[in-house]
Image (cartoon, rainbow, N blue to C red; front, side, top):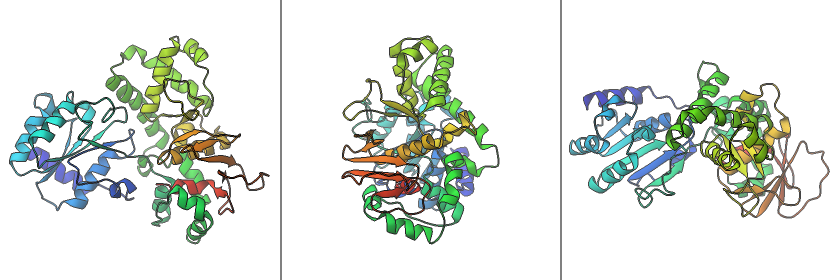
Length: 394
């Protein structure tokens, strides 16, 4: 136990979180079992350690961070460890890499039922089922999603500002004033291109090569978040990699599932399963007609974020595709997104349509229930909203 406390103390003392993540203020920390899901590389470990640093004094042994990479858990159970921690006054356990522990959901439930004053906050892969189809936890766990950096978070870090997030309704109603206030301090367009290239994953803060880091992260998503958690045989990895590559080369695009099944030499149903796994791992975003969902074929497939596009097709990313990918990813954080109606790009919450425009010189009619995401402008007018401002939704 002492070794875990020493590791906890060192990690908390040395954690660096230059941007306060909005999720930190959105979680109901009074809940006893909190799951924080997020794609690999978005900063879940840093998030847990920052929580400990913010809420517990140095040397406070009532809180402890542990990582299931530790070989200790190859011969000891979580419930055994938690019991000892609890009897010695421990009250908050921060569990990292939870999916690597074989019976994680059953043991978390045991701890919840048997240690009534113990709070457990655990991180997990987005592929893990915490609520859906999880009979062990669905009535006791509260699940949250930690996303990569929004453009707002990236801009705050790079320009040393502290701009708040806005709801979509606030942006629609007041985008001119909001954009004008932001532009008094900084020109967002000076930072927007860099964000689209390398601003989503926090490891852009590291000195190592960003693209190489992201390639390693993508492969870990495939090998661990999909193969290991979904219990898929390693021999199928090459098919999933090829499928992802074929989609990434053309995304956003419609999917010819029959052709893809020929290309990777498997059945159409297996292709659809793989596409769903890639979505669950936060590598793809799928766009459906309103009312449709998996297992129906999506209308289009997008990369989950624009940084992924630049890894696969460096120096050859279509600007319009990139901007639409950014819009989908930013809106999807808070809203349900479907294929837009009447030649628009997206339908938001089955109510509001959005269409991308490359600039504010494009002729269009002002239409009820339609807003326009306009590129390459600092501020907009009427229902013309700067594309970059949608990066302030979280």
